[in-house]
Length: 178
Image (cartoon, rainbow, N blue to C red; front, side, top):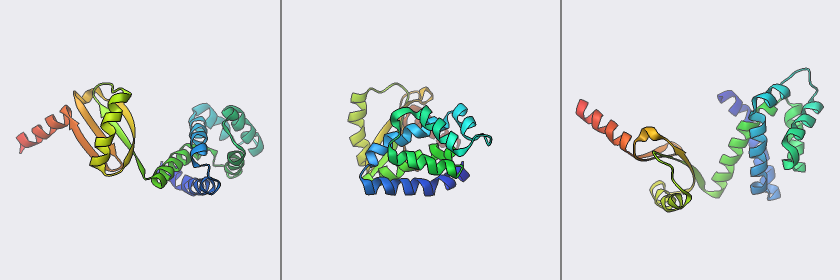
């Protein structure tokens, strides 16, 4: 994983700069995410990494699988990746691109783990409180984690806020053992 991220980083930086200069950061964001999902598919990955397939054929195949989601600028980017044998790192490029975009916007990704499903209304009420706690604008993603028993656990970057029953029980167990 670390090696593929190292390979993907210069491509993601160059792509982000090109998008920034053309003012298409948001437009390309969705397209790049879709390209990353396609490239992450095992069958597609096998086809694009086949050494018996010419680079041009890989590009045509990849564009056909992606459909109309590829703009002209990204089409050229796919060609460059194919020429350099790097189509397989598109999922990492997509992730890094989103990180650069969020950093530019001053937004961070927050993963909210909840013991029970949370609806959109509850998330909208919760996010401003979390933004105050983490001192940044947050983009929330909710994951249901029944093992928490109750409450929530929030992870933003390398910070964590654990307000779950499981977290409190674990803290009590540590206190009792000491």
